Length: 137
Length: 137
Length: 137
Length: 137
Image (tube, rainbow over all chains, first blue to last red; front, side):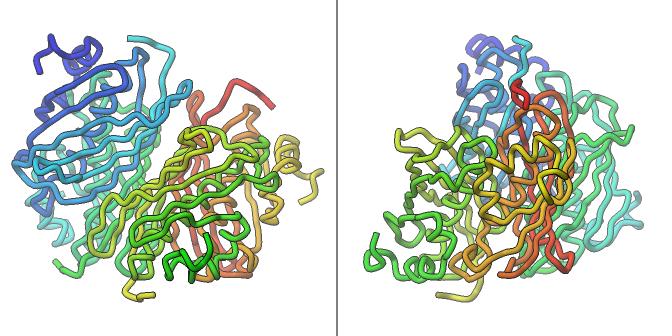
């Protein structure tokens, strides 16, 4: 997605987000409370088993939820997240992460992120709790 | 740490672990059930807030626990992990991760990982559940 | 639900499950991999804030997932669970818990449980990891 | 512990906390940010396997952390908690829960709770994230 099509807050975040750029993360959809990102697993992303390092899936999911929540206008950070690794991720897999808002009350946001591969199989599930600060974008 | 000083299983894992190499991860101590790793945060590891992406701390902690558990001899993978981000991590921070075994019963291992910075402040806490497969190293 | 309508493994578990009986848990649906339970919050289930103790929602969700997974035939126990409390639960609220299988590979089962109140509002979300033992029912 | 020895906020909470009373929870120590509670597992607390229901350990741990955090003065609720069940808990086991503060920044508190049995063996570990409201006790 070109910067022009992204939600302006997400475009601003991606500009500074050196690690999401390294990941080759593509923001496919972005609006307040929602986000869908995609990336392709490379050979420099593997762990000691030769499959994608768990942090790669975590990174994709965490960026996706950060974009979804911050696009609502307030600076928001991830406070605690639980990731379940459901199936191995291999080099050349194309991963899609979709943020699913669960609840939003005051300063606390609960968001799940589903990560699927090119065959539609779910490879990871992130359950995150974010905190919205008073500072706005 | 040179490969010669690492536990042989950990050395074998690090050789293939392209992502831990990208992180600049240094295995300071490694033995069955225990591991201590260190890394320095670089400018290409930041998120949209200009601080370390949550996945960097997750990656360091996840590699550290993988080394600790796999050094016990069986192939072991992370099944689910909860990470609490306790303080912002900045460029040039030197992070130390220490695996703390919590329980080890049959095929399931519970391991915590504490991540501290150069001032000794705790910046993250990972609580992980691993599964030991029948395959051995 | 009468015992006659329950899946036989679930009926056997409920017979011994003194705490689920204390909760007044009603098994509405039960089959291998799926379960739906319901209960009404009583005045003896509140915490220091006069709302339902977090353990009540946890208990309902945990029993529901135990029934769903054990009905598949193997003895299965909860290894780690993350519960998000999304809205306050009050005395006389009628809670419904529904097990949602996420993945099932070998000995590890990932199951989510959604807990809603009588107005259909989601009050809690449990993300659980279970371990299936070799022993069968 | 008699009410006279408890921290006044904890005594006030325990008075209303019908479920912790049902558990037979004894507040052994209580001060701002710290708490130690004890209870004995009864036959009416078991699950379908005849061991303590996971919600019993969760309840003990959750009450312990609520007392520790609320004794700091602000109303605080548990937002998300991860519990790891590390060893089976049996009828007549005497459980001790100890709150371990991990971080406390602004509105968010991270607290771990270790639960041990009468032999000193760790049976559960709770990692919790609480939110402090502006309302004070």
